[in-house]
Image (cartoon, rainbow, N blue to C red; front, top):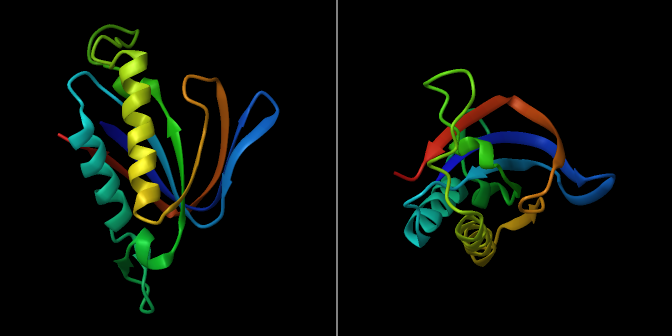
Length: 146
């Protein structure tokens, strides 16, 4: 699994003109599922993100996690994170997980976070979405489960 993670002060996602998810302070996670990913990858990445110390403590140091700050998370499926741009001018998506498998692991990832006590909002899997966010910092990380 691949994730682009941004610390935000707020974020929302729409499908067409309908809002489907919105959060205040927390993390926006763009999540891509690749072939070979399994439940272990989803669990690893969920735990990693919930406990990643990227929020400021009283001294302004990145020393607090999403769990500690009681922040929220907006998880948006992003097929294009499976894209390979090394050859040619058009990305190849040959390593992307099949849609049914990707959706199953995406849902498991979200459920795992909720079981950890995190307030999670989502986009709509497979839909064209419009995501708005206010990046805090800016703070952006790229994580992979493998």
